[in-house]
Amino acid sequence: MMKIDENSYELIVSITRNCRLNIRNISRELGVNYVTIKKKISRLLSNGLFSIKPMIPAKLAGLTAGLVRVKNPPYWLFRFLSNCNRVLAYINMEGETVFLIYGRDKQEVVDLINRIMECNDELLEFTIEFGKLPLTQLIPIKNIEQDNGICNSYCNCGFCIIGNGYIKGKK
Image 1: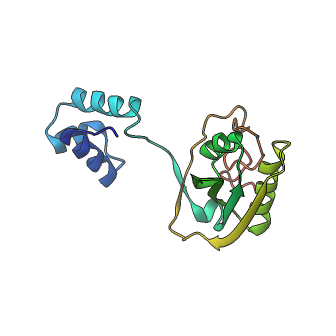
Image 2: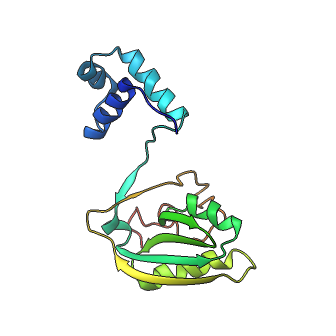
């Protein structure tokens, strides 16, 4: 595991406290040169030690959650789960993948899962348990590289929250 130095840690803490601070204010707060702060942020980003992602409230995207367990998952599923804006988290275990997915209601969650499973010819065995996300939950947008609002994920399921009007309020 990579470690970060004390200055990088202080920089991340400063940004976490107030992500709207500009680099000039951060340099004043930390007593470090503006150019040094800018280079450090670039280095942290390029080394994958820091990430800047847009987030939206769950109440905008959907509060219904499904905990899905897939037996003997195929390799393509991992790539899909890591890029899908509808997947909050996933974990691979021996012979099983578990992921947390969300939507506006149970039917939307089920439709999304069915669409994911249709992306390949393999018949996948899965179970699902439903619950609700907290009103304060923020949803990270992982896949923002879209072509004309079409998700570039593995199966292009059509449920992407950016490309189908969820953010614009059309749906």
